[in-house]
Length: 201
Image (cartoon, rainbow, N blue to C red; front, side):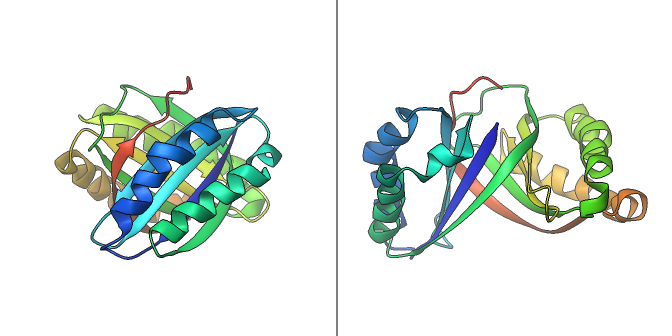
């Protein structure tokens, strides 16, 4: 499965207009498209940022002209710029269906392209296991571009306190991850879940 991550850098006063367009109009176009496996929308209202993550059996289907227009319309509504990234969904686990308003952490990942498999194993076998041992985790997924080693580690939590505890754990593992498998986690962004994907992982 693949993911297309569309980030709209809008303005604080118009971010809700962009979210509304995504949910009231564009979601239907995306989810009815051939090969689509769901759509998740996130928002940071204070920063004016919207993230729309769509999932696909075949990534090329996400470039359909109708879908491209839908993304551009949402960006215009939010008075923002659109940045699109594409990834393979390398790791995905869901323990519970997150409710709207759940806390989401999106952490940038840099893996050594020559050691991608080792990096993925570290995330799955150690990082995911330790996060799952705590309370409040709803879902986690690692999105990766294998060619360059860049990716996103996206976790969804029942509340902000749980997300903050996970961030502290990630900080503890940063040095270990870099020394053992060449994995770096240069920074995290915080969002609120608007609406999740109904797909089955």
